[in-house]
Length: 169
Image (tube, rainbow, N blue to C red):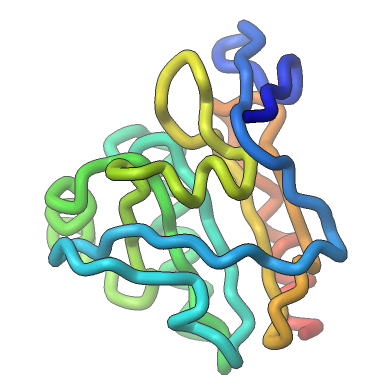
Protein backbone atom coordinates (compact mmCIF):
# COMPACT_ATOMS: atom_id res chain seq x y z
CA UNK A 1 0.00 0.00 0.00
CA UNK A 2 1.29 3.43 -0.92
CA UNK A 3 2.30 5.78 1.88
CA UNK A 4 2.53 9.54 1.41
CA UNK A 5 4.40 11.51 4.05
CA UNK A 6 4.27 15.28 4.49
CA UNK A 7 1.05 15.80 2.50
CA UNK A 8 -0.81 16.78 5.67
CA UNK A 9 -0.11 17.92 9.21
CA UNK A 10 -2.09 17.75 12.44
CA UNK A 11 -1.24 20.53 14.88
CA UNK A 12 1.83 21.21 12.73
CA UNK A 13 3.10 17.64 13.01
CA UNK A 14 3.52 15.72 9.72
CA UNK A 15 1.38 12.62 9.27
CA UNK A 16 1.31 9.81 6.72
CA UNK A 17 -1.56 9.21 4.31
CA UNK A 18 -2.08 5.62 3.20
CA UNK A 19 -3.64 4.63 -0.09
CA UNK A 20 -3.91 6.01 -3.60
CA UNK A 21 -3.88 9.80 -3.82
CA UNK A 22 -6.73 10.83 -6.14
CA UNK A 23 -6.26 13.53 -8.78
CA UNK A 24 -8.48 15.66 -10.99
CA UNK A 25 -9.23 13.72 -14.17
CA UNK A 26 -9.14 10.29 -12.50
CA UNK A 27 -12.06 7.93 -12.91
CA UNK A 28 -13.68 7.72 -9.48
CA UNK A 29 -13.21 4.34 -7.85
CA UNK A 30 -16.26 2.72 -6.34
CA UNK A 31 -16.09 2.11 -2.59
CA UNK A 32 -18.29 0.69 0.14
CA UNK A 33 -19.07 2.45 3.42
CA UNK A 34 -21.83 2.07 6.03
CA UNK A 35 -24.88 4.25 6.50
CA UNK A 36 -26.14 5.26 9.94
CA UNK A 37 -28.40 2.19 9.92
CA UNK A 38 -25.40 -0.11 9.24
CA UNK A 39 -26.35 -0.80 5.62
CA UNK A 40 -23.61 -0.82 2.98
CA UNK A 41 -23.59 2.10 0.56
CA UNK A 42 -21.45 2.45 -2.54
CA UNK A 43 -20.41 5.52 -4.47
CA UNK A 44 -22.12 3.92 -7.47
CA UNK A 45 -25.46 4.10 -5.60
CA UNK A 46 -25.41 7.78 -6.54
CA UNK A 47 -24.45 7.44 -10.22
CA UNK A 48 -25.96 10.07 -12.50
CA UNK A 49 -25.56 12.82 -9.90
CA UNK A 50 -22.75 15.17 -9.10
CA UNK A 51 -21.22 13.84 -5.88
CA UNK A 52 -19.49 16.02 -3.32
CA UNK A 53 -17.48 13.93 -0.88
CA UNK A 54 -16.91 15.91 2.30
CA UNK A 55 -14.27 14.01 4.26
CA UNK A 56 -13.81 14.63 7.99
CA UNK A 57 -11.66 13.03 10.73
CA UNK A 58 -14.41 12.99 13.40
CA UNK A 59 -17.88 14.51 13.50
CA UNK A 60 -17.36 15.20 17.22
CA UNK A 61 -14.81 17.96 16.64
CA UNK A 62 -15.59 21.61 16.01
CA UNK A 63 -14.21 21.96 12.48
CA UNK A 64 -15.73 18.65 11.31
CA UNK A 65 -19.13 19.58 12.74
CA UNK A 66 -18.93 23.02 11.11
CA UNK A 67 -17.93 21.46 7.76
CA UNK A 68 -20.93 19.13 7.90
CA UNK A 69 -23.31 21.93 8.90
CA UNK A 70 -21.92 24.15 6.10
CA UNK A 71 -22.56 21.52 3.44
CA UNK A 72 -25.99 20.68 4.90
CA UNK A 73 -27.09 24.28 4.26
CA UNK A 74 -25.53 24.40 0.80
CA UNK A 75 -26.91 21.00 -0.23
CA UNK A 76 -30.45 22.33 -0.07
CA UNK A 77 -29.58 24.85 -2.79
CA UNK A 78 -28.05 22.43 -5.31
CA UNK A 79 -30.01 20.40 -7.84
CA UNK A 80 -28.97 16.89 -8.87
CA UNK A 81 -26.09 16.99 -6.39
CA UNK A 82 -25.59 14.64 -3.46
CA UNK A 83 -23.27 15.47 -0.58
CA UNK A 84 -21.72 12.54 1.23
CA UNK A 85 -19.90 13.24 4.49
CA UNK A 86 -17.48 10.39 5.13
CA UNK A 87 -15.51 9.67 8.32
CA UNK A 88 -14.22 6.72 10.32
CA UNK A 89 -16.72 7.56 13.08
CA UNK A 90 -19.08 4.78 14.06
CA UNK A 91 -22.45 4.95 12.28
CA UNK A 92 -24.11 5.43 15.69
CA UNK A 93 -22.11 8.61 16.35
CA UNK A 94 -22.97 9.95 12.90
CA UNK A 95 -26.66 9.23 13.46
CA UNK A 96 -26.61 10.88 16.89
CA UNK A 97 -24.92 13.98 15.47
CA UNK A 98 -27.39 14.30 12.58
CA UNK A 99 -30.34 13.94 14.94
CA UNK A 100 -29.02 16.47 17.45
CA UNK A 101 -27.99 18.97 14.75
CA UNK A 102 -30.93 18.60 12.38
CA UNK A 103 -28.66 17.44 9.55
CA UNK A 104 -31.08 16.28 6.86
CA UNK A 105 -29.57 17.14 3.47
CA UNK A 106 -26.09 15.63 3.82
CA UNK A 107 -25.74 11.85 3.88
CA UNK A 108 -23.29 10.76 6.58
CA UNK A 109 -21.37 7.55 5.95
CA UNK A 110 -18.87 5.57 8.00
CA UNK A 111 -15.61 4.14 6.65
CA UNK A 112 -14.69 2.59 10.01
CA UNK A 113 -15.17 -1.06 9.08
CA UNK A 114 -12.86 -1.60 6.10
CA UNK A 115 -11.48 1.90 5.38
CA UNK A 116 -12.34 1.12 1.76
CA UNK A 117 -12.85 4.78 0.86
CA UNK A 118 -9.78 5.97 2.80
CA UNK A 119 -7.46 3.53 1.06
CA UNK A 120 -8.87 3.96 -2.46
CA UNK A 121 -8.76 7.77 -2.24
CA UNK A 122 -5.63 8.20 -0.10
CA UNK A 123 -7.35 9.89 2.85
CA UNK A 124 -6.50 7.35 5.58
CA UNK A 125 -4.11 8.72 8.22
CA UNK A 126 -1.73 5.87 9.05
CA UNK A 127 -0.88 7.04 12.56
CA UNK A 128 -4.48 7.66 13.67
CA UNK A 129 -6.70 5.36 11.54
CA UNK A 130 -8.88 8.39 10.87
CA UNK A 131 -9.61 10.08 7.58
CA UNK A 132 -7.87 13.32 6.75
CA UNK A 133 -9.96 16.41 6.01
CA UNK A 134 -10.78 17.15 2.40
CA UNK A 135 -13.22 17.41 -0.46
CA UNK A 136 -13.58 15.39 -3.65
CA UNK A 137 -16.11 16.29 -6.35
CA UNK A 138 -17.14 13.71 -8.94
CA UNK A 139 -19.22 14.58 -11.99
CA UNK A 140 -22.23 12.68 -13.34
CA UNK A 141 -19.93 10.59 -15.57
CA UNK A 142 -17.74 9.43 -12.66
CA UNK A 143 -14.75 11.70 -13.33
CA UNK A 144 -13.01 13.48 -10.46
CA UNK A 145 -13.32 17.24 -11.06
CA UNK A 146 -11.98 18.66 -7.79
CA UNK A 147 -9.73 17.40 -5.01
CA UNK A 148 -8.59 19.10 -1.84
CA UNK A 149 -6.46 17.40 0.79
CA UNK A 150 -6.52 20.05 3.51
CA UNK A 151 -2.85 20.57 4.42
CA UNK A 152 -3.45 21.23 8.15
CA UNK A 153 -6.16 18.83 9.32
CA UNK A 154 -7.42 21.25 11.99
CA UNK A 155 -8.37 23.93 9.42
CA UNK A 156 -11.36 24.30 7.10
CA UNK A 157 -11.42 23.29 3.44
CA UNK A 158 -12.07 25.81 0.67
CA UNK A 159 -15.88 25.64 0.64
CA UNK A 160 -16.30 28.41 -1.92
CA UNK A 161 -13.99 26.81 -4.49
CA UNK A 162 -15.60 23.38 -4.04
CA UNK A 163 -19.12 24.75 -4.42
CA UNK A 164 -18.08 26.80 -7.45
CA UNK A 165 -16.87 23.60 -9.14
CA UNK A 166 -20.01 21.67 -8.13
CA UNK A 167 -22.31 24.39 -9.47
CA UNK A 168 -20.46 24.39 -12.80
CA UNK A 169 -21.15 20.69 -13.42
